[in-house]
Length: 139
Image (tube, rainbow, N blue to C red; front, side):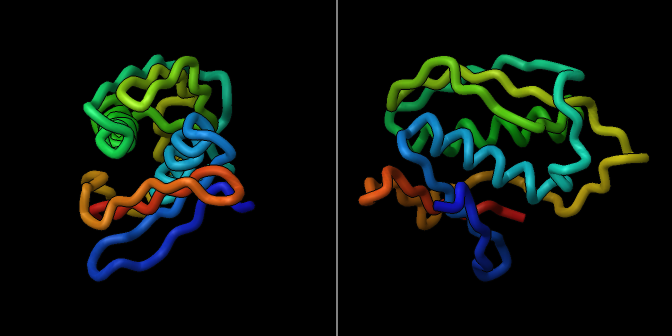
């Protein structure tokens, strides 16, 4: 099972993330988002660690808030992540740690501008292999 894949969606881009459980699904969704922003192979682990906490009334809102927080850290704090470790998870709250480094224009080419994760066509569903999410990202 591939952890994530991208698909075209009108003027936006779609992301399908998969995981054996919801925490791994959320981790893979953040990895998929990161792969749109920069080449993940150029991001070194261990330079910075950032704790991320998000809440929402349901798991769909939680996924949107989670991805938008990762985008905020990229766009405003200039942080790029090589991995994510979900520390605690419920369907209304997530605490994770991102590991990576500060954006270095000499090593990290920004591949695409992503404005936001959206609720448009958002789906999170259980599958035979675990969980799958489909989310549209505004570019």
